[in-house]
Length: 256
Image 1: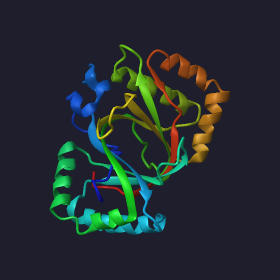
Image 2: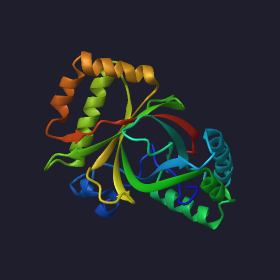
Image 3: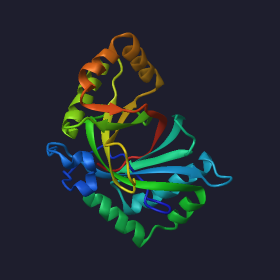
């Protein structure tokens, strides 16, 4: 919610079902009314010249002061790329609200008076912002860490398959991997505004406590039959590209 546009994007809590396909993308045009969504933003950023993570720390400190006064609901993280197919960003800034109503109120407050945090943001990074809607597949466990590992994978539904079917398949696969020793929280992100002409239906997002837990998942998937379970559950439902992996850090947790 700072800078050239509002920042944000990963609301862990979901509230209110969005039924307009204009706001939830092509994948939501089917009968997925049992799923719940919240509007979120996804921001990919590059540091301005001579700026670094130290400057980002200063920005988040200033932004948190603004949030304390103007938006108690907002939660956000920053993400540092580890494995990506390109080097087009230095970091991602991802956050969200518990409802669309809170999202709109926050925007109004920001444009009314940002306490010059937007200027500081523009001096720190150049960002591209998009709006998505997210639904939770597997909620984070109690005590989820403030830092960990997250991946984003672009997925395309097979013909005639609904998003609800895909959510069920991802959920079942998540449970199978948890049984093998690699528990993860997961969400589906649907493109809404600012994505352009996308060639996929949604992002599958998964998050782990640490690299050790992710590594246990690697062993389970490739050496303990996880890939066979994936074939059983996902074939004919959805196809996902190789994920991009990031380290995340919680910067501020809102009052939920």
